[in-house]
Image (cartoon, rainbow, N blue to C red; front, side, top):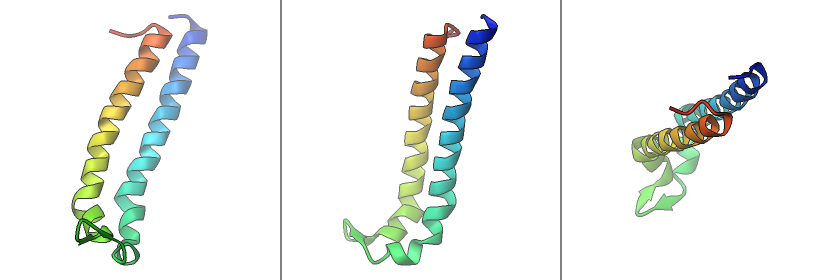
Length: 83
């Protein structure tokens, strides 16, 4: 891989990584700090705060894993470093 391509590949990979880290922190900490406020909203008969703490964050993490894998594969293919 050319040095220019390596820099662009790392730049795009780094940006994706930081976005995923922000989303992870959001669903891990920020949502849970506002559980009491979110409990005033009801989803499928359950308070939203309870749902996000019990199921929503876990679902978000799994979805994030699939999105990250797909986006990283796209970046790798575009930059010519795919397996």
